[in-house]
Image (cartoon, rainbow over all chains, first blue to last red; front, side, top):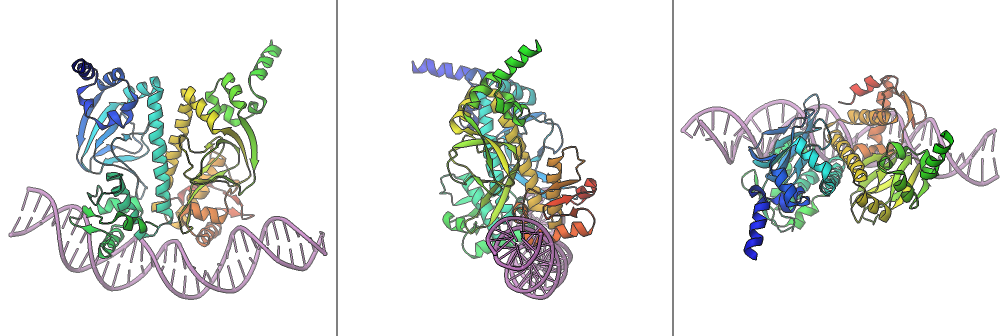
Length: 238
Length: 238
DNA sequence: CGCAAAGTTGATGCTTGTCAAGTAACGTGG
DNA sequence: CCACGTTACTTGACAAGCATCAACTTTGCG
């Protein structure tokens, strides 16, 4: 019996989906095996190197991308070139503004990224037919809105020191939600961190050095950071 | 015939809903007359004076509120009392975080406000049964996310002068989307504007005085502002 | 090994916050 | 209706925090 069930399961679930995080936690968990199979005919897995542009601001969206691995950076630019990072996306988030003709942000691979690309048409048809899927997307959108509003407090009311601590805490929490993480790689350069926090590279660097001097963090590789005591970092977040 | 149709229409559409903006542009436009009638048994119209608290951060939500008139201010507070306004809601927006046990913001009446209150249970039951309604809510949530991200650019990367100009432009655009408005009342005090922009009262005041001295705006009553040339204000937004 | 890119550190100045005083609008009671 | 007090806002002087500019160091890569 076990053998038969396993066969049915394997034949109904596309191979690519079987080990996919989105299958269980992400939007694909709202799909039946049949829908998943149908969808898989319109998807393809792609890799992007750090720095690749995934979506351009004010350009038409041709496909959505489910983040499988890595970090995607969403940003906006003022006419004179000032930059602001307005969001980070991790697995299993969906990249691409739903129900709009054009993107309202630039999306870039912050690290090396694997995506499961879905054509715009297939995705929108699926959403139309499947209210449970739209509900999943609604939950993700509400969470992104909560995160954006949390970040507005950081941008508007925190000092440079608190901003940098908040960023490090954000990354640490995302890498290990249990709060036990002590060591990780930063997905952003100092320039990107500055653009996320509304600071210059130099100020970010100074505040990182200060946290290091105070023993709150250890810096190995520029990109590689250790946090011996997450609660102590939390205290610096304001 | 006209008489009969009118009767049918009137009997199916609740009296309170007949002249409501939300009936046509807001979330209620996703409802059939029967659903509207069913919903109307769980709604009541309430008025709040400017300054009234509608929702408290980290407190359970007991009902949602459709904004019929006025402006609602969403804000967050750090432990030491620093304030940040994270959003403004106008008619026909829905106040209250969907699918969450607790509010993630404080909601206050910025001006005198009329709301159509819906109990949490009735609203959530209706959303569960009505995918078209959830779709409407999804569109509102996506728009709020777009607005939050636009505002993050203002908070992170604009100067004080650009921030104040951006705020005035935002209000002017909301009061008259055609872009022809020249005169309006500010829905926020200088203190709230500061909390929206991540500035102090004094800096807001100085920048307003500067815009006035430069002839970009005219200030009558503290709260009452005229913009003779909206395009000129737009140029100051960075 | 040497060059380019990324990051750090230091000196200085501008922007904005802080503190303080003063002015205009608003409501209340006489 | 007008003095009064309260609140909201404005303006000024000064200080602090962050940006800017510049030199230097580390890291990664051909």
